[in-house]
Image (tube, rainbow, N blue to C red; front, top):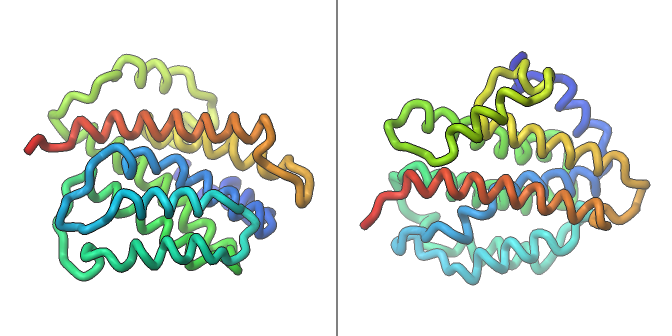
Length: 223
């Protein structure tokens, strides 16, 4: 089964309302955020870490799908960085950071509408980056610690995840995504997602994000 064309995954987004789509998009980006905090960006990008911090904090402050002035201000400050006026040839970890930043910009564009298509683009970004990480790990001679644990995880995944035929990070992302979407859809209409169960989702996303960070660090070149 090709996860890019899986109707079950698409249907979950389709039945969400605007706040639920915002929550799903936010959690997808949350699964990508550790490399933004913990891998230093090139100096010539001109991105102030404080601006990234403001972007991520304001981006998670309210999840109702409506436009948010503080978040839009943080997006504008980020877009003023020299990075967006120059051509760059990033290494893989840097490309991961750039794609993640692009995801947050997509969220800024989507607020106020949060259509199915906009939401799907953000959630698909997390899936694609996970798959790309698996691919570069398979194709590289670089040793990424934890291979035995990753193999044991893949041996134990359920049949649905197994049918996708993808690697560790793609499978893990889809597993955590599934938990997030299930909780979002189960929450009462207009209810608060991030109760005790919601905070567990944040922990799941952060645990996954930290695993991504650990793997990406294996591809960061020492100066």
